[in-house]
Length: 123
Image (cartoon, rainbow, N blue to C red; front, side, top):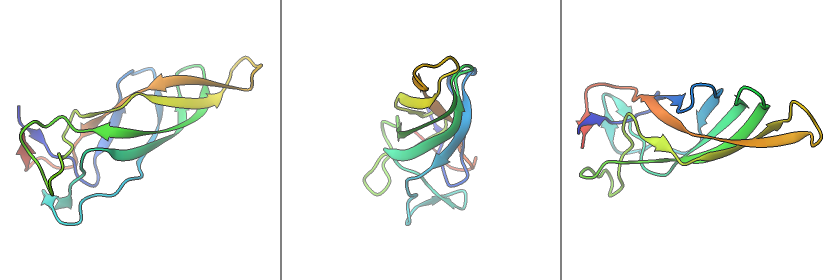
């Protein structure tokens, strides 16, 4: 099934709608391939989450990796990320609402909600 290729400017959503936070791409985009005028992102892209919450734990942070699901398309010999691709499960560490201990963890997952462009799709 063809889906839009993810590019610089893509946005994320949390798989669990009760979770929140700011997702930032910390990995680098392609420097050679563009889709819809922006450079694309490829498999194993690193992201970080800050100001995370699961509805109880607050001020949580964590890092993770986005996993590409394309089965036919490669860019620079690496699978590109597409709309709907998800991160690995990310362990978040934040403030425990009822210490001790002062910190606690939860797991979360994000997915690409908007690829950042709608012109180029791939399987």
